[in-house]
Image 1: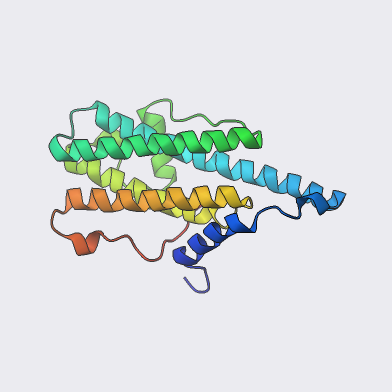
Image 2 (image 1 turned 180 degrees about the vertical axis):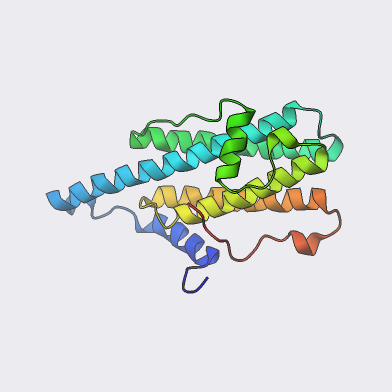
Length: 202
C-alpha cells in the first residue's frame, strides 16, 4: 500500500478530530466561510455516496432474511447484523439531512441490486443464491467492500463529526466480517480477526 495511512492511523485521526473542534469558526474570513460551504457540499456528496451503499447492504440483508435460506444460529446472528445495518442507514440519513443533501434511492428490485453488486465488484448475486453458505459468502464479500468504502471516505470527509461516524461504522462492519466468517468457518477464530490494513475503494 506504499505510503497510504493504515486503518489505525485513520481511526486515530477521526477520533482526535472530534477534539480539535471549531473554536476558530467565529474568526473565519468570508473567503474561509466560502471554503467551509464548499467542504460542506463535498461532505454531503460523500455521505450521500455512503448512504446509497448502505441502502444496498440493507436490501441484501433484508432479502436474505425474508427468505428461508438461513436457519438456526446463522439466522439469529444475521438478524442482529441487519439491525445494525439499519442503524447505519438511519445515522447517515440524519447526517445527510443536516447537510442539506438529497437522499439517494436504494435498489428497486433484485436485478437492480445485483447490478449494483457487480458494479462494486462484490462476488455473489442475490438472484443466484442456492443455500445458506451462498448467502453468508455474499454477505461476507459485501461487508469486506463496506470496510473499504468507509476507509476511503475518511480521506474525503472534512467534518470531524462525520469522520468519527465513518470510523465507528467502519469498526462495526469489521465486526460483521468476523461474525460472518465464524459462521462460515466454525472454530477458525484466529482467521476471523479483521485485517490490520484495509484497501479503500470509493
